[in-house]
Image (cartoon, rainbow, N blue to C red):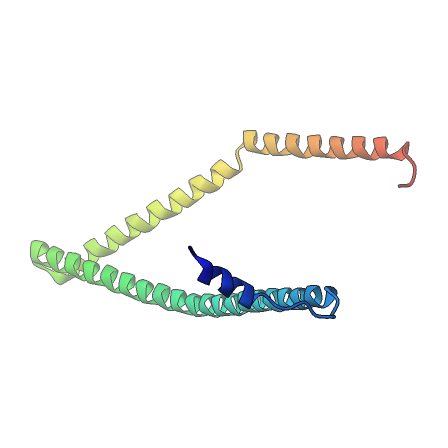
Length: 156
């Protein structure tokens, strides 16, 4: 029924030659080595491209961070100016508005300093120091025990 297919298959088969089978194996190994080299070459090229993108991304991140900082400072100054203007309208005097702004900024600075000092105090509480000392003593005892246990074994 499908004789034409059978004839094509027999025509496509190579004729036996006098060469040993190992040359086919060697060519297969050579092609495999070339494919592996090509694959790893592509991977290295991809890695180099990704590292280039990462370097570029770091520059862009630093630029974006700088832009965000400038925008944040600008926003802060604008808000301070707006608050000063509102205080000037309320007090009917620019001098009293500046004094009010100075008082608000001193209070904010004092609050930030107190928060910082509280955080530093939490880090230096006696319980924290005792826990740290206990961890160091335990580690030291364990290390000394391991050294003593290792003396009886001899050289490795």
